[in-house]
Length: 411
Ligand code: ASP
Ligand code: MG
Image 1: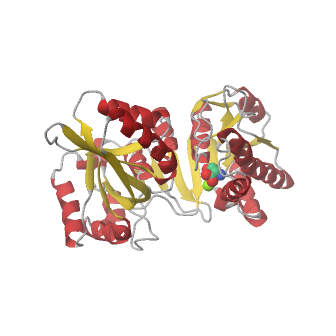
Image 2: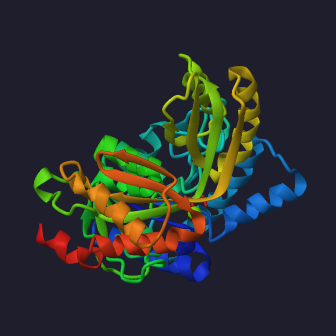
């Protein structure tokens, strides 16, 4: 088998843990697998580097930030390769560019555009274990570009797709994907398997097990993912295409996201092209917009509300001043004290009562809903941030997710 194994920052946080990872990698190799390992920066290295940069410049350029942040992963690949070498296996560490990963031009949130596998294949054919730096690639200018926070997952999946690996194992400090955050609801259950679509929703909804882009990539290229613990050998959660027969569980998980800001633009002229101008301007600043609601018009004006990630707030505020003037809106407001709670489930499409049950759970907990959005497999509500915990617990109970493991095992 050819396997890609990805270890997150906490799994390589110190030399003891690096040795443990090295042992695990060597074990897979000695069992007969070809192994490509992808690692993140040690522990909180990335955060520490960001903090250091901010001490020197309040607004460092994205290019220099990428130059800086990419070093975190380079430290861990070199150290892991040394540990593996000391165990007697052939090994080589590679940066993203050395591994043939090319990206687009957007620093700090670059997308992987392709992987040239020539070097990877050559090294693999020499029976080496490859240790590749996650979270980075080479952009069209020849610079290092990083893939956005948590981007090592995407590196792992992209490599797995490029070399046609049998499985991409994502090792992490939890046992797999849960029905909701186990730190929030202790009775949360581990799911044995989940579809790409559900995982994608959970990942982008604030269940931080996997970078959403990684799941998207995995779905596109049908890469089988196995999310599992780096601390034990227990089977984790398999993420793969799930047939309709298996979509019996109505709701597979409840996600919450605190990294949300609600924005509203008031008294916007009711004319063609307004929404286009608003959202194109935000897109041009690389601000991702999530839920969008336009109210029914009063006379000849509308209100448009939408949500963005907290990290994009500064950029969005700048853009909004300009937009307000340009489209002649009366004003705008924003509120960071909100959270998004969502239910996700592939079996939801054909069951209209599911959304109603979620609203009932929130009503029972006396939680006010500020915005609602739905898709085929999810329902999301914006609520007050300090009510998020209560909301998740109440919804988790409503859908009986404490017994989820049995339910998914039964289908
Ligand atoms: N080190 C980067 C981060 O902390 C990438 C990763 O961990 O996947 O976001
Ligand atoms: Mg990380």
